[in-house]
Image (cartoon, rainbow, N blue to C red):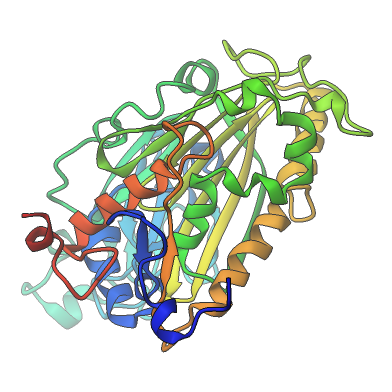
Length: 413
């Protein structure tokens, strides 16, 4: 078959049906990206960090959602709360460090308070304004500390101790309702005992956040993972299914990974998670781009923060049991990092894939079809999980994924 000219290139290939491809503009168009921040990321629950990263009262961690700066703190009542990391006085960012503690005095203020370094306003761990510098002198009776405070955000601790935050005050679902049952397959394993983050790294990747999520949502690309081919390609592997859930989520059924079939590896059956069979592997893909991966002895999460149409920050966490002995923890770290660390077997291959896609789908690139047309009765190489994701993306955005300049709702009628 000869190479395709421009007209042929733009035709629907073969006999694919609507919904089995998307238009590449959903990855590259700046207006679509800005709309995603407003219509999706400012509306949904986002797992910004893990409770073990706030080990004591006055611990904090900063993050962002849809460009809004977020701070999460643990109060003296041991409750975790989230606020906009913004002073109500002049809009200054209060805390710039990624993590730490307010127990001791910060460079800008007193102990046990969040202090804005601009004018010294102070706030307690519940977000209340505790002190306004020269308040009565400047404001007399017109403004008191009781009149101002930090912008509180909805916050829940759920599913293995992750801290979920939303910018949406009118969010209609709890985190559990939002997940719609997709965590049920690993719930006992991650909720029976407290978990703890033992590995953290982040990377800014030159690709669209949805392309990273695609890579986690389909397993057809396992052909690029030598480790997966050696340890997993058997009848049990291909019998797994992609299971769709409400709200655009998907999980992937388990099977037993044969680690000892990889040269230099051994079985990981001696160290698992509570109520979790040895050497098993489940994956949860959460709309609009979060991933939770329980594989044998280690639990991994990916949290995406879209930065631009062709740029995403990904935070990778590896978790084990808080009750691990030092010897058990070292085993978990080794098991995690040989697969998912910055130089692990699988992670760098995934990053090569998505940056290769990102380089061809930059803003202004020619629109083209991106195919999601494999149909295999929802078994592991079926791309039904990706199609499920984009169907929900279309509903949130009211854009047809295969032609994003058309309205989804109009096309569906």
